[in-house]
Image (cartoon, rainbow, N blue to C red; front, side, top):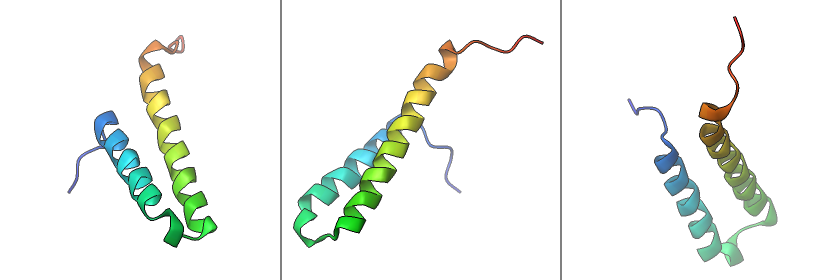
Length: 61
């Protein structure tokens, strides 16, 4: 069973996927490219949220 994704693992995964897509861009359909870009943007958004989380105000009880 794999542990939770860390920011480092998520970053390395998205870079690897984008690098692979760039290398094989000519053989990919535009739909495949859009899916990879969408996944990359989602991951980047998650990473930014992970960075921002310690600085967000906590709800008052």
